Image (cartoon, rainbow, N blue to C red):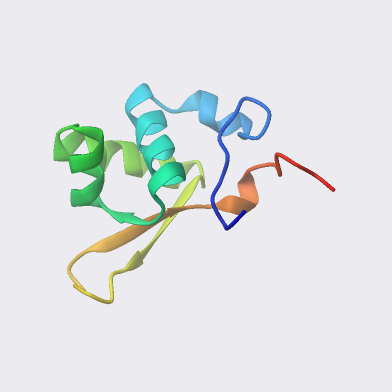
Length: 92
């Protein structure tokens, strides 16, 4: 398996319980789709841009996601899950 994060009640940190449902949806989309910009997250989740912005702020405050400036367009950020915060679903 690649760097994809598996989201389950066993692998997710307790901080996930403290974020709103929209943030949980954004987190789930990032887990399935990989790194995305805010505009792509809005498209994928079908949430308003303002809601996605708020969800990302909440996720960043709980250290569940991080962002970097996009190489393709420096005006945008690319968001990704902080995989270190999530437990390994198949420890060996």
